[in-house]
Structure formats: structure tokens, C-alpha cells
Length: 127
Image 1 (cartoon, one colour):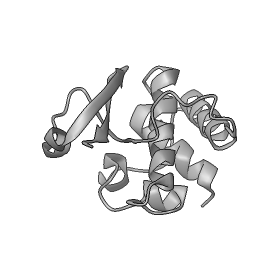
Image 2: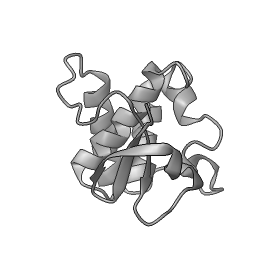
Image 3: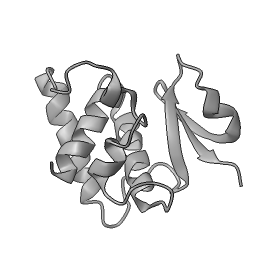
């Protein structure tokens, strides 16, 4: 699978109903993980890493069904992957985690909140 497809799937399933800025932030966290020494080195390996993104192991179809949202997710992925000057970066490179504001993951107490965009809260590790 191509990096653009993996990134678009992650944006689609994690943030398709969110503002475009939140979709870019989800894409950026994915790319930040690719650049991190702690995560796999490719977009697809980051996206499909075991139990990192809930949609990859929820037992539901991984085929996008909302055409307009899928087109937008593919566009966000393409812009993100071609962003050589970091012009769409809205989070620091240290932002490696997020969750929706309606869940309370166990791991959140070990991180520092960076910002909230839409319903997603973004985090970095404690220094």
C-alpha cells in the first residue's frame, strides 16, 4: 500500500468529521511518528502498528464509504506528504499522541497536552 493511501485512511477514520485543521493535525502526528526514533520508519508501518489507532483493530471495514470525506482525506494526505517547507505544520514535531475528547485513555497522565483542535486533544511526552 502506498504511503498516501495509508495516511489518507488514517485521516479518514480518525478525523473525517473534524475541521480540516484537525485532519491536518492527525496527519502531522502520523508523520511525526515516522520521524521519531520510537516508531516505525514508514507511514504504513506507523498507521498499521498494533493497537496504535483504534480503527485498525475495531473489526469494522477499512473501506471508506463517504466519498466526499474520502476525497478530502486523500487531499490532506497529499498536501502533508508534499509539504517540504512545513507550511501546514500546526503542531510541534514532539506531538506524537492524540485522542478524542470523549475518551479518557489510561496513558494520558504520562503526557503533556499541546492543544485541542476540534474534538481531538494532542500531546507530547514529558521532558
